[in-house]
Image 1 (cartoon, protein in one colour):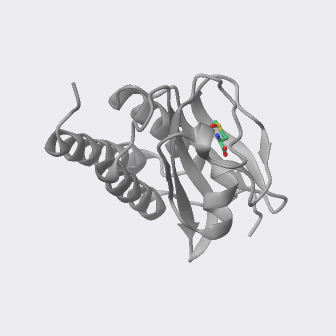
Image 2: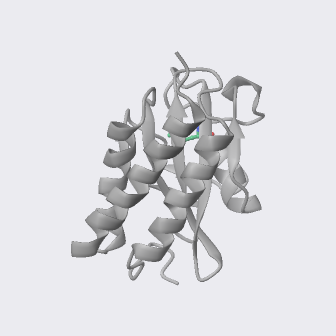
Image 3: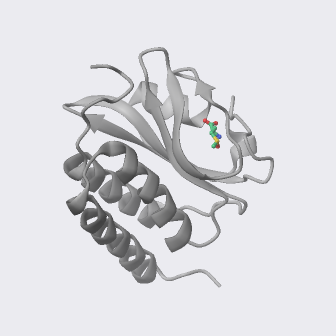
Length: 165
Ligand code: SME
């Protein structure tokens, strides 16, 4: 059964609140992103991967995540993550097989949602979520993920990011 929009919205609000709580004690980006990936994987249904890719000046490099082994590097402009980072636009992909250049880390993935993360107006990485179900993510997830990333941008201490910037 599909969850109602209200339930999805509530789930995302709860996740953003938990994120703010866990960043209070230790706001460093590494522990916050690590626990954020666990929050998402634990708190949302039907995901097979949730985590982060960070820009290190040579492209995107794998950050904290939950799920199966993943590609370590993704060039800007490549795949769903590289497209989101380069265009600075969230990507909601209902069917990854229909996305030109999609990078299949886990063959089980069928749909994907990627949201860019900013620091001082620059894209420093992306949040990436994969699902084994077609069209798992809808407009309410997109709005919820954007709010979750906005909370991350606000609460994290981003000193020492791999960009070196
Ligand atoms: N599918 C992504 C690659 C990362 S994995 O899904 C974890 C992409 O096309 O960018």
